[in-house]
Image (cartoon, rainbow, N blue to C red):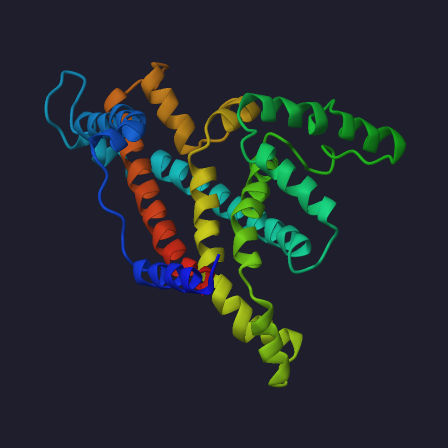
Length: 304
């Protein structure tokens, strides 16, 4: 290829830079039809149904009683314990996941360690529900493998010392299994986005490693860290099957109370269940809006 042709191609590329592609035809929208249909059928319609049901009594009459019942001591307690578990596992999983992600990116661990950790995280982040609950029961239950080994080999009885897998601490420990892998997957790209030139410039200006992290790296990572913590909070707040399978409803989480109200047990009140679910939807919408905003702020550094 001649130099003139090369120059012409380069000029065309520079001229086309920043030009947005034309809007696609209707044929290009066919690929997203399943997504739009899924969103409408399983997000929009159920949300509308929750909103309507929250203002109806058992006879279908308009009422505010369901919303007023949300302020009862039992319901407030259910929201409070759900928020506590979500915060505890979000912060705990966030710290643990960040340290792991730091080790495989900035820490310079071997490539095979990064490959193994990211592969495990991709599986573990989606491993929840009944299988996860049974796995922890088989491991840390009263007759679990780890419990028996600690008791027979080391003479340590976890349950005599106050530990219980079916308590707040036990459920939080179980949630951590799928919380820290999600943190690894979401924060690793942000750590990879820290450019070597920034650290070199800091060192040339006389900054120590601590000063670099405090004044350069952490301010850049903070939006990503906060966004991921919020994502972990929402992930734990909406969990249902794991908590129900592990505790049998012993812990009064919001998701378990909603299931009890809608399924038709002794506390059967469909309207209250709808109101509870509507409250969860509002919290999740706020959570995801904050996550989206913080992610947008963090992405600007990745484009530099």
